[in-house]
Amino acid sequence: MRVTTAFSRLLRLPGVWVRHVAFEPDRVVVTVALRRRRLVCPECGFSTVGRYDRRPVPSVWRHLDLGAWRLEIRAELRRLVCPTHGVRREAVPFAQPGSYHTHDFEDLVGWLATTMDKTAVCRLVRIDWDTVGRIITRVMDDGLDPDRLEDLFDIGVDEVSWTKRHNYLTLVSDHRRAKIVWGHEGRDTATLDGFFTELGTKRAERIEAVSMDMSAGYAKSVAKPGHASNAVICYDPFHVVALGTKALDVVRREVWNDRLEHAGRLYCQSPVDSRQTLNQALFDGHYLDVDADGTTLVATLSLKPEFEALIGFTQELRDRVECHEQHTDQARALLADVWSHHLASTAQRQATPPSRPTLSLAERPG
Image (cartoon, rainbow, N blue to C red; front, side, top):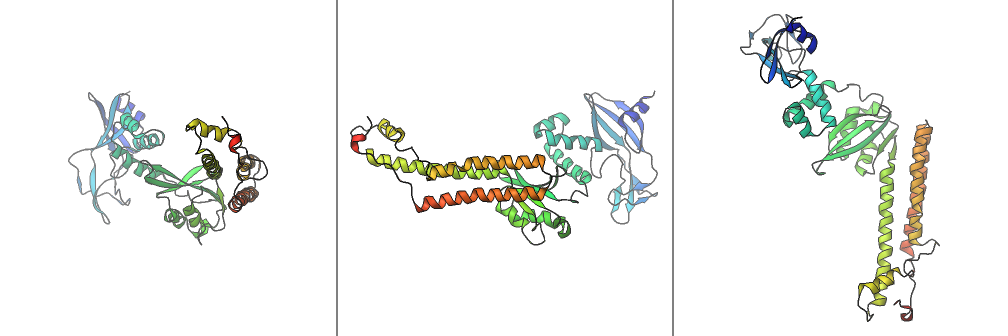
């Protein structure tokens, strides 16, 4: 078997013949020729048999490495006169217009960019990060599914950040297909408005549920007329529990500060001026004992099992129940019940401050 035949079968480049193979110290250069006779415009696809001229130097494309060698594809191309775009270099079937890398090479870089950091990608394929960015743009433009926004019923909205949380990217996913279908820089109402503008009113009306964090900007965009105003907004359990835990921590600090202030007033005139005396006052069992009769801290702590039940509830429905409407209605009802308890306990705390136990100086520890 001739070496040109072997490389033709090895490379499997569409629409070309392998004419020559040269082995250089650091690379392998494969010279190819296009099979078609007609010249094709890379911008619009216009084809003609007449040529404008032939380029004096061959064009070069980077292909997948052959072991330790860099593999380059070279071809002498012609130029044509397009009635719309003027004089252009003819298109090739194995690379995108304006690119100096083959489709196979760009597909590899695009996949590596989703699984590795930029330093590792640059070292592995031996290109700079700016080239990686341009390749990703071309791969997305060429390989993005044009029907990705069709048949959207359950979607999720979230944001990711980079450069120490100074830049944000809003992502929209399709829960049923488990794929990202849209993305844009930003994380506010206007950013998500762009998604619904691209989606269109007719397709947006078919959305039944939107999962998101507790961001007011995203919810405001979903509720706008012409968007998914009839869809059920489902807050993810992580942010619900995080908010409840934050509220619990606020109440805990308030109760602790009240006890700390009261203990300091009782023992500020103590002849023993030491931190140990104050610690004994705080931890002697009198100031931290909270009766289970509906006081602030106990009422707040009682919400923790309810939040845990909420997580288990949604997980169980996700595994066993196929009816999405029943899932969202019951989850919303349970969430409303949990927060009604939280609001009630907060109102009670503000109306009647918790009572503090009092000690006489004779009962002072130590």
